[in-house]
Length: 267
Length: 264
Image (cartoon, rainbow over all chains, first blue to last red):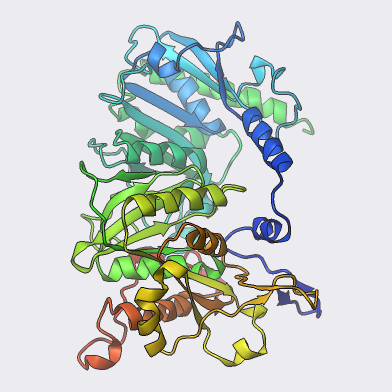
């Protein structure tokens, strides 16, 4: 509890996490019905892998069906735009599946009828070189993750006004031996969520993986932010995948312009 | 589950496990950071779990360029075989409803690795203290029945205060009395499970408020040190520096980035 200047007593937020659960436990023991509701919710939240066109589930895990040595993951609109313009627009990429998921924050209420166009995650596989994104049980697998964060998340002893976003930082697992395309993320900066989950998995199970993190002050789709990922094109994972940089830049410009028109409905 | 860092699974039989509860002021976690950093403990594995929010960063205990690029995750295990100490550090909060499953997985690992005892460093909201507690030391301890015989005498000789029972339902005057640790996160759950599963467990906690909790963490490690003597107590060695505990490099910028000069 804390008192404000106006004399009201309010519940102060606790850095150690939410107190809700503790109060629930102390006040009321969980009934078997509560547990069943929770179990059903957990089942609904499961991630499902499907073939996009036919909406059928993939019988085997994606990595078993498509063995690969390089797995590139882009998280967020700028990272995805970079990968679509520079990588999947060069060469022939085949869509091999998508992941559907639902949780209580989704706007649709039913998991069964979530349309494939609403898939948040699509998997592509390079037809000419099937070793890129396929599965080779961990032995020669190398994972690259691309994502963005807001520059206010970046901590430095210098003043934040001296930072010039967008800039790239990297975090790599122990088994990733190649030199990164930019400087490593300095202490005490950390990464959460999906990129952290992927990197944690790779670090624990000794899979070589690298995360390229772009700190930017523009979170919506932005040309300058996407172009900040360009140094990654010289990495071993992406080298050779991009044939024509000027052409890719044109593809990117078109992508950004299309999105701009859609978002500026008041101008 | 425990996943070893190297090729083989380390033998932790007879070791003392130190771990934090994610609690008010993150005091337990700060205290474990001080212990790992001061004793220069080595990483021996990960406690890989889906119960904690994922997070990664570079080595929080880096002392030079060479050792600063090792990736750390949200739950890691460190050891100091010479003192038979093993430390589990938790670096993020629990996902809703996952704290109980975590406690179960943790205690099952403790049992299977044959640790001699578990010491949980924790904290509790200082505003919940009653009048007597306000006037006494802010440190408290709790023992599970399995550990009482072996540590009771030593603890008595230190004149420590045991955590008092309080009303289970504070507003009801004829409510039963039980152990309550508000703001203690999983401390109470671990204590209850420890009693039930006959685990040798000691809980050390301090009454704190949120804020700059570094002094609280230093206080808690000194309290632990009175008992375990993991480093030489300050008083004994006149040549020792004022602060025997080494703060890790990751404690920099705890209150944000540098300020823009234009502010002044």
